[in-house]
Image (tube, rainbow, N blue to C red; front, top):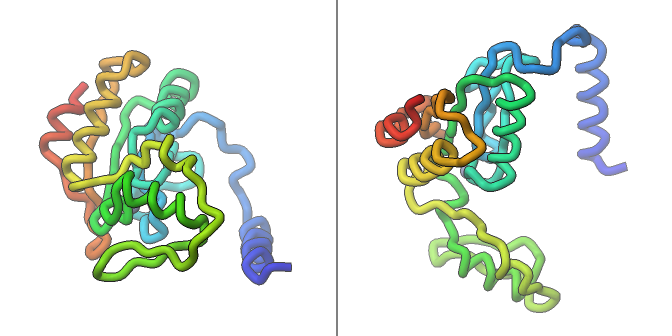
Length: 191
Ligand SMILES: [Zn+2]
């Protein structure tokens, strides 16, 4: 068995041994949702003080308001009763390090993991790439405050999102753990 798989299953057995959450209801008890980046340094349960059953956490690369993130938010509100939403991007996000063009070029030359240095991204190997990446909007980020604001505006103006939901825009600082308000996003996200 993979070492990692073994570690995860062992950790899960430990979790189960002291598990006492069997009676939680499905709808989030604190009636809110967070859309944030998948970055491994971010732990929304810790940075926002969540316990099991408290809130929905929707994660993707960048924490972007993609169609699929909006699908989850609409379900979160319409069927599971959340009333306030957060969009939280973060400093030093990997989504700032490339563009659609760079990603498409890398994927068309190779599917293997690329490396990055001061001159940008490089493929290790040629061959066995795919041009399928040309059909994906990678939702990269130029500046964090701008991307948070853009996503709050997209969510607030979406036809399936009711006006009464406030959407709060923040940037999480990976150096301090602090959530930094994005004033333009907060303004755009008012209920
Ligand atoms: Zn990120």
